[in-house]
Length: 591
Image (tube, rainbow, N blue to C red; front, side):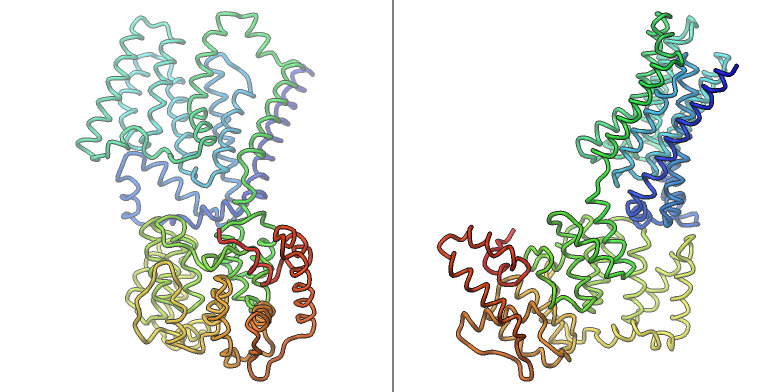
């Protein structure tokens, strides 16, 4: 009796510990991942949204996934939902395996670990986990029905409905039910029944595809199961789906050898240690190969940009390893908004002027790339990128909020009202929507809002042609010569393109923007230009700092000493001058 109690306590401790780690893994190491998933979709309380989700087979996991994902606005709640779902998968797997004479908790924990791997990838959104859970639920109900005729009726009547509700997630159920009948039921008609299951599946899919839904050929069998995962995650997904039928098949053959089965399933020290080792190895695989620290940092930077927490953006950027276009783009945006662009632009990695913006491409760039246009007061282009992101990704709070703000700034209140009506049907953005709905009812609130007033003062008043992969900085400055942010970005773009002649020509305008001193990076550029061109350009009322002149002389001396061997010169200068415009100018190569 004592041993049974101890075994029970040990099992609960192992299971509880694993799910506690599961919760902490997502809450602490993937918190920005969860926040990003929430921003990629919007759950709405209306029938149109419901109809859209069920427009193709698979609407139930899509709808439930979207419903639960809205709570990822809190990473801890999101991690808790992930953990509850994982525990449900474990419990159902344990029940299914036990029904097939395989009573082993480690086997039931394998799908949980596989799901942790998959959920570490942002493409494996929560509706995928819901879909897998639903297929286990259907199969668990099926095997719980003892009377054969009732099981057959349940499948033949229930599976067509299940296909309509879950789409591609219903496909493995056919295989599981057939395996159950062929391997673990002794009815003489089991082969006929298995054939009927296959025929029923084919007919239901064919009729649904041609008559009810008109499903594209590529989506008939797999929609809405995720695709497009890379090699490691793709094979994990395959293994995830075949694990349950694989265990059932193995169980069938093990049942033929009771002695081997007894050794494998007995609750002894050897099996306990082996199980712990398997779980630890799986945890290692999750952390080593599934967890993407760089992606998490990148999404963290994106989150802080959305919150306008510019210091936190720079703090994360300083820790980010290597070059990443999105990180560099956001870093420059943070430097601009903290007034440090001209001072510290070369203190961070740069990739030329393309690091000031993202390319116009119908991918994640649309989702991230509109930020710079908003902060440069290029409001029409900010609206354009937000609208295209909405079209490409579907309803999401981030794009809708930007469409509301830019529409109000432009005075397009009817358009703003349309987007506000959508947000008011959500759970967590209705309060935000009501705030700006009041702006439409009371225009004085717009005038009193410093952000709205600032951007309205800088609205474009002369037409120009928008360049999709450019910031139109000169056009913005022509419209509003006092647009300081556009001016700083313009000078920065000239330096990043190493266009010193244009920089020197335009730099004299610095006196129009209330600078008290020349920003460091601009000072370094002008010093180099004056030295190289043998000129003495300096805006009236400004002078070069003595310490900058001393550093430049040191740089020039070292460069002259090693100029015959540029790799050596680069190595020697990197020690003290890597984060200067001079080093960038002479040793940076466009990537």
